[in-house]
Structure formats: C-alpha cells, structure tokens
Image 1 (tube, rainbow over the protein chains, first blue to last red):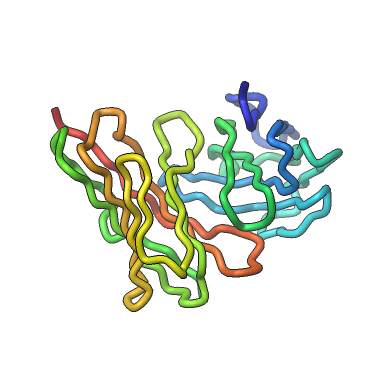
Image 2 (cartoon, each protein chain N blue to C red):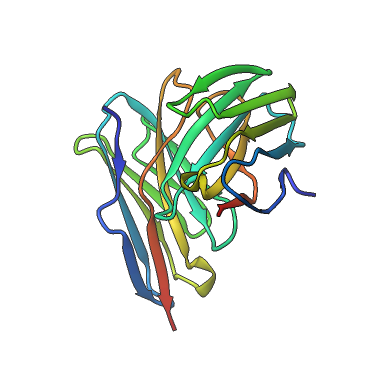
Length: 112
Length: 112
C-alpha cells in the first residue's frame, strides 16, 4: 500500500496551460507539503497545510494554488504554466510540523 | 539566514567499504536533523533522524553523528552495498518550526 501517492507521475504540457497535480496520504497525518525539486536536485518547500489550514506559503508565484479538501489530500493547481515551472514536484506528509516527513513518488512536470 | 550545505556533492566508494556523507548547517537554533535517501526516479526516503540533545544515533547499518560545536552532521553507512547508490540529503528544523530546510544533496556511487 502506497503511503503517499501522487497523480500523474508524468505531465507534459505547453506554456500557458493550466494543470493540476493530486496528492493523497493514507498515514493519518495532519500535515501535508508540496516541494519543488529542480534539475540540480535541490528540494525547496512551496506550501504546507496543517489540518486543512495553510501554514507555509513560501515565495511562490500566485499562479500556484494549493487546495486541501481534507486532511488526507493536498492538490496543487498551476495556472499559465511557464518553462521555468518544469521540475519534479513532491508531495509529503507528517504527523506534526517540521519533523519526519514521508514523500510521494513525485510528478515530473515538463513545460514545452 | 538558514542554510544547510554539504561538503561534497559526489562521493564514490568501493562496495563493502564504509561511506561518510557530511553536512554543515549554519542555524545554531536548529534542534532536529534528518537524513533522506533519494534513489533515481523516486521520492526521498527517511533514513534516520537525531535531536540536538544527542550526538550519536544508530540504525541498521547507518549512524548519524551530530557535532553542535562546529555545526556539523554526518551520515555513516557501514559495508556499503550497490543498493546504497542514491542522492543523500540532510535537513534541519528548529523547535516549533513549520518546515524542514534541505541541503544540496550528495550523490553516492558504489564501485564494484
């Protein structure tokens, strides 16, 4: 059973399009995160939700909008995609904040 | 500001040897540290963590050492195996902080 799952695993789209990535965790955790990993493998947090409440919103363009319909789900919607958005996006979850996090398999987004 | 960095971006070791991956951190207020392993095409996987009230913690074939005086963290892997080939990340967090701050990552390659 996958603890943190993401869909899709690969996403190829053109500039200007709008796309969504979905994340679900079945660990019963109360906190979920979105990270962006660039081509140099650097992991940077984008957002975090605790009990459906946004608690971290790093310096991310407002084209990125997270949505947490419940504690087990955290989706990421991206408007007007740009070439620089190409990266691998990871969802993660934890029980409590800022501690041991469990990561999903990632979504590789390619914007052409 | 916060920063977590690694001394070496790549490390190559012989199979069966011990590996040591180093990490320097700059935030003396950090009280929690964690190591992740990321295999190609997968999400980061938790290896081991340590709190600042400890200077050593052991797991299965892995040991984490924390030197708060020089703000240095290391991960030791005993009897390195081919399956240990991956990128290794250290991350830090402060008490009450909402997030982990990740370092750059070290690529570990195992030579047969």
